[in-house]
Structures are given as structure tokens and as C-alpha cells.
Amino acid sequence: MYFQRNERGLSWAGTELNSLLPQIRQHLIKHYDYQGPFYAYHGAVIEARCKSLQEKLPNAFFYYSLKSLSNIHIIKKILSFDRFGLDIVSLGELERALLAGGKPEKIVFAGVAKTKTEILSAIKAGIRSFHVESVAELRSLQELAASVGVKAGVALRMNPDVEVDTHKYITTGKEENKFGISRAELPEILHCLREGKNLQLKGLQAHIGSQILDPVPYAKSLAVLNEIAQALRRENFPHLEYISLGGGFGVDYKSMYSELPVNQFSLDELHKILSQCSFESNELHFEPGRYISAMSGVLVSKVRHIKPKSNYDIALIDAGMTELLRPALYGAVHPITTLHALSEYELNRLQTYEIAGPICESSDVFARGVQLPFLKEDDDVLILHAGAYGSVMASNYNTRPLAPEVLIQNDSFQVIRRPQTYKEILASEMI
Ligand code: LLP
Image 1 (cartoon, protein in one colour):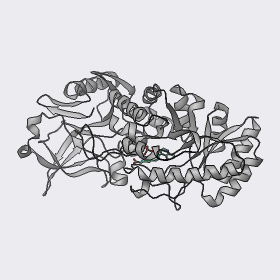
Image 2 (tube, protein in one colour; image 1 turned 30 degrees about the vertical axis):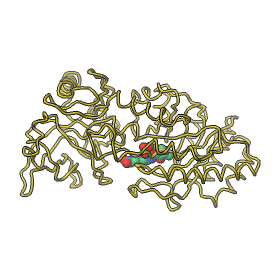
Image 3 (cartoon, helix red, strand yellow; image 1 turned 120 degrees about the vertical axis):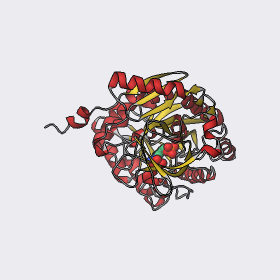
């Protein structure tokens, strides 16, 4: 499922990259006159990840968090699995979800500060529910649903005040975080729900953070939601359709070859822990993003120049923080590799490099002190596990076009997003 290296070079989920990547490059030059970095996704990896979620959590439903990788073609692939719906956070994501064939009754809308336009559009589209984060949002929802004479589905996004061990920028379920409804706000929320003729309470949700490796906090979060569900029943609210424990399943960013990554969130463990818990709803939901998308994507780049330095050389590559912001923003470390054959990877042949991008920022560095075979201009450099929060967090900084996206399936590929042109970037300013 992951990477293998032999004397012919590097393969990924059975696809020989040494023969396919040059074909992709040629295609991009021929059809789009484009020579820059690109994202390559592997269909087989996406399928394997969805399958393992369905198999290992047999009673759960999954609302793919499309903020992690939102290309329409990828969403379509994920939706071909029957227990999948979509978790969106904006009107733009709603449009993507619908274009990809997402059924409104399998779409939930999260987001801490939804606009009235967004809420109204999603009501009109007939989505399953809004994951409401505040009293103000609930009031707005009631008003807007009443204006079009329908009932809007509601799930309360609770802040369960559960600690998780992850980067401080991606923990969300602590009292001090901006997300979710605190218990103190609950009475007022219940009052709004009772008064709100156009609101239908369907569920409870909590999302405690991202890149979580320990399943135990999910059980803690479930316990809090169960307790709230019981309190709701005592207040005469009907049995809930669902409890959602959000996303956050972490992946192994450290290794590239292992079939069974060691630093990865264990679905088996989660299943074991949760099967000892009850849940006070008909359905149990998760909103995985990264777990599906991270390992499915590689950022393909090439060496522009080698710059000698006193400690080790810097390989300046053509991808930068504009294509993958995670290292600059969170200090995230992604495995970096090349297409060289196995013999080139023998220890005594490796050199130490800093791998840096072309952007005018000192933080535009992917790795320092990485061991790679001897690099020269135009060599391919692959930044792995870049499917999640890669292309979706890209920017036009330095007026660089958004890089194209390619979907690999077996030994062939399809361009699923063409490179952005300078004309497109500048068009909105030509007024
Ligand atoms: N549900 C909710 C309500 C969320 O806020 C998120 C992610 C997810 C589900 C999906 O979480 P996942 O399964 O992908 O961990 N840019 C950061 C991650 C930000 C996550 C935001 N919320 C990164 O690159 O690590």
C-alpha cells in the first residue's frame, strides 16, 4: 500500500513512479505548458483507507471532512463507499460536495462562524444537519429556516473539555478553544430548541483535535456526549439520530515503507475501547479527513539548484510553502525521498541536505539534515504524505499559480485539476 524501492526505483501502491512521473511531467508540459510542482494522489490508497475504516469500525458512519483534500474527483471516489457522507465548513465546500454528487441528506455543516448566506443556502439544499456552535448561531438558524418555511436539522457541537496530545494549533476540544458549546451554555441552547419551531435536534457532536494517536480521548468525549444525551432525554427531547465524535485520527508521518505504520492511530484499539461503551443515539459518526487523504498524496517537485553551505548543501526545490504550508506553519515533518534505485540509498552513498523551497521566507524549508542520495539539478524530490492539508492550504503567495493535481490509478493517471494560469490569478484585479 505504501512505498517500495528496488533497483528500478520507487513504487507506490504497486505503481512504478520512475516510469509514471516522467509521463505526467510530459503531459503537463504538452497540454498546459507547465513545468512546476504537482500533487499526485493514488486512487488505491484512498480506497484502502476508506475500506479499512468501514471494516474496522463496522457499525459507524463516516462523514469525510473534505477540508483536508477537497478535489471533486477525490470526493467522488470516497462517496463510492456506502457508509460515507460529507462534513463541510463553507458554502464553497457545499458547492464542491454537491458537484461531486454528494446527497444533501448525507451532508453535515460544521464551522464556528457560518454566515447567514451560507446557512440559507445549505437550508435550501436540504442538508442533514447543522453542527451548531453557539446560541447566536442557533437563533440565526431558526430565523432563516422559518423564512423559507422548513425545519433545519441541528446537532450541537459540544466542547467536551477533553485533552489530547497533539500540536497546540490543532487541538479543539478544550474549554479555552473557540470551538463548541460549553455546558454552561446548554440551558439557553435548550430553551432556543424548545422555542424554535423550525429546528429539529438530531444529534450531538464533538471534535477534540487533529493528528491524534491515542484513541482513549474519544471514549472520554463519548462519555461526555452520552451524559448530555441523557440530560436531553430527561428534558423530553426525543432519542437522537446520531452522536458524532468528529475527526482527528492521526497518521504516521515518520515512516514511508511500513505496511503497518507504527505511529498511526489504531482503528482496532478504538473499536475495542468503544465496544465497551454505550452510545445514546441510533448512529455513531466520525468525520475523518487526514486518515483518508494524508497518505494518498505526494507533492512532486524537482531540484532547481544546489547551494553549498558550510555544514551541508541546500537543495532548492521548485515546491514551497505555497504548496505545502504544514512545515512552515506547524513545524511538521514529512518524509522526503527521491526516485533513485535501492543501491543509491546505501548508507555510505547518502549525503546530508537541507531541502528548501523558492519562496521569499526563511521558514520556507521542508527539512534540515535529511539524508538523500547525491542530488543534482532537475532530480525529482518527493514530499510524502502530503495529501491532507496540502493543496487545500495552498496560496498564490509570490503570485505563484496553484499547482495541478493528478490522480493515479494502477499505471495510468488523470489530471484532476489543471494548473492555474497567471491570467486566472490576475483576472479578478483587472477592473
Ligand atoms: N471535523 C471537524 C469539526 C474538524 O474541525 C476537522 C478538522 C475534522 C473533522 C477533520 O480532522 P482530521 O480527521 O483531518 O484530523 N491544517 C491542520 C489540521 C486542521 C484540522 C482542522 N479540523 C494540519 O495540517 O495538521
